[in-house]
Length: 317
Ligand code: SF4
Image (cartoon, rainbow, N blue to C red):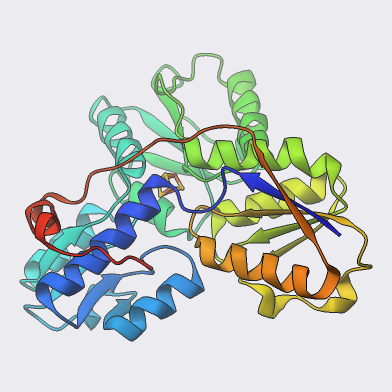
């Protein structure tokens, strides 16, 4: 068996920052630290932090008054922030700056009385947070067919934004349809699908052609990981989205295939290595790393943690 290990893969700058933020918040304030939604969409990361004293909640009402609360990488609406303030919580914010960018664009367009078409997945934490910035002004579009159903009063004041972790190809198809129906629709100067999503998709698009099986490390509720699996399937390869080798069966392999391994932006490198070890033990696999792009993005910690970080030991996951 030959393993092609895609690079870049795994943790992005936003996930690194969010994980370091939770680690530092636990050190600074002690357990329990409440986290609004999963800090990132990965079971391994969430379970490891649970053991360290993080408590993940889906409602601010679950957090006892006066507690410490961290907002996850996916961002939150102003209403959620206000709820946290009303409960006198010490709130820290690990929202990825690239998600904040989309929030700020939504605020800007809404202030100028635009109707905003948000391309994204209904119910995803990031979409809920972004729509909460201007609920009266934002319409959600999930697929091409939704574009036909849109009812727009003033087509001269229309803009689109996207969730950061979409399939680049799907988003482009929807954007083309929007532009064909609304030729004057505006968009931000820099696209919203983030660098990490684009790079991981580009790697799968290029490298899956040389493989027969594609393994994407990531959790089922990770949007960017799901898109990687779908992309591999579209190129005709057998593809699996797995949390780790515990989800694999030896019967799924002949033993002489070429297997491409990648990981979504919230999947830790330890699960990638465990999967490689699993394949090496059973199929005598060799590993070749194929780097299609360098990444050097880094995001600063939330302000209240920066000073503390200088003296603390960031352990991460
Ligand atoms: S996937 Fe992109 S938007 Fe999401 S946390 Fe990572 S860098 Fe930020």
